[in-house]
Length: 244
Length: 311
Image (cartoon, rainbow over all chains, first blue to last red; front, side, top):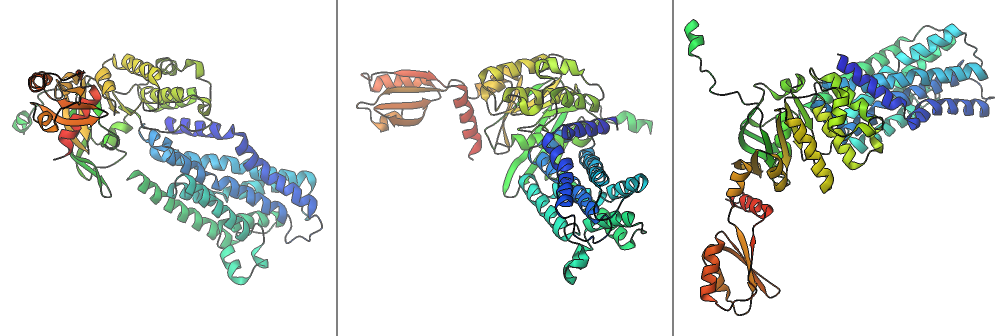
């Protein structure tokens, strides 16, 4: 157990001291939010705090999927095999990727919410400190199924293919997953797909807090289904990796 | 009941650390390891010698539980390899295994230190692998030789009973290679068991006290370096000016195995140079430019593979 924690700590330090990772996962979503807020201030809101929630969901997707290429690289370069010659429980290597991905998702979401609080989201929300914390915390928990998708990608594809699959997943979740356009503005067929994607669930969780609504049951079902489905498939892929 | 226990066969010697019993492993059409049987005892330094593609890496992976045999049984410390790995009895340096970017040398060694039951201190592992000067450096800023020594340090920092090294010096220059093996020798002086895969005969000769030769997944020879060399001992090449020598005469000299003509010279390989030269001088007393060369290690090794490789 202490070995697993040591590995988790090493993995966290390794990623947190990487400047490119910090810029991409933490800086980029906040920058996108500030730019959109400054340029599209007059656009009528689709829902209160909608822009903040959408970009916070984008931050969740970027950080959540990051486990994919990271695992893929380490499978390709042999580091994961090297670890498997040590007493470290093999699954600890995968668990560390997921936990560290989550460790980026929390501040990434919080930074967007903080930026919205500071500049004043001009879609008409002014959340109090407690509501903001609740929004950040619940959107962060809703990121779990996205990290499961990241792990599934990293364990299914090695090396370059994992990067490609992650980019594809990112584009799908961003464009079709309720972040770029809400499903209500999509054609029916696309809207149905959109409402089945985990990023839509993350957006729903955020919007319900921002609007002071209760959580939509269908969003929770989608998030739970993706956690179980992607997590289960990732576990199967991991067994296949081990049984080489 | 007591009789049953008494009559159970007692082991005759110390139990082997590693056992391959009729092990076969295929990848698609390729049989990487083919019916390999082998035992490695405590305290041995064993070289697994063979050309590229011989099955060395597959044998190492089978021994570490990274691959499973299609037939036969692999045992490590008397049980399945995965159990020995989980118990921290093995340290391994895999061929070309990468290091995670952004990690510092001392952090990686600290990780291994935390994983094994009876590890070396981080300071000792750094000293053994000559890494003290770069302990705080990130792995992507290391030279090739330094990276290789980090990987050695990862293999031995856990102070394992068995050290497994797969082509550990493949990427190193001559000096780095010598210093690498000096480090390994210091470690094994404490009576540890070492298995290393290599395609360099001189490396097997210099470091191991037992050499196991494999090619095409088959075991070809197994013995001390001297015994393995003796299987090809006395082999030489004889080279003379080609003028007026008929191929027929040359091919029928005693002990000659091959005849090669090149730029006005003929080169014979022979398993008994004395007999060949005597007969050659008898039949062609005016032969000029006679040169005799003792077969090098590489040649002896090729001969072994040639004998065993083609049925």
